[in-house]
Length: 171
Image 1: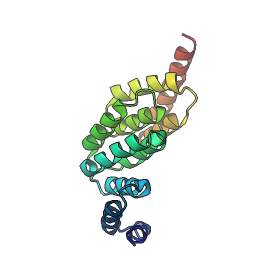
Image 2 (image 1 turned 135 degrees about the vertical axis):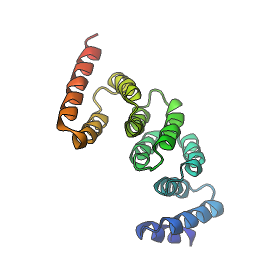
Image 3 (image 1 turned 180 degrees about the vertical axis):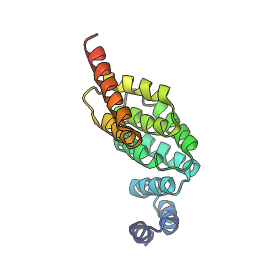
């Protein structure tokens, strides 16, 4: 019943209803990873960063093989937060434990862009050029973000990325 109520709340966009139902579902079935993951997503969508952190940490601990997908979700959801600094701190803490996971670096780039931390963005793109040189998603996302500010900024970024890739591949 709690699962059904959660689904209805999610589908109808009623985050409070979904959150309450998901909390009940987790209480009734603590081993349900689906309930935990959906609850962390709803909490993030509701701007409840502090409440979502233990759930995300638990998911990463229980299902390390899903870390890639979880960090991609974090990149998408944390960029929508009104508390940009809180989102940045959350992702920084989580990504710290995954220095060689491209998706963790991507999530960190996404939130660093939201707070204007260009040094972190550059550092993480350097890391990605080494650990995932052919992964285009972070470059595409950053280009799109910059394009909304200025086409010249987006073009400059792409030129920097080409130079970075050349430098790292041939050095």
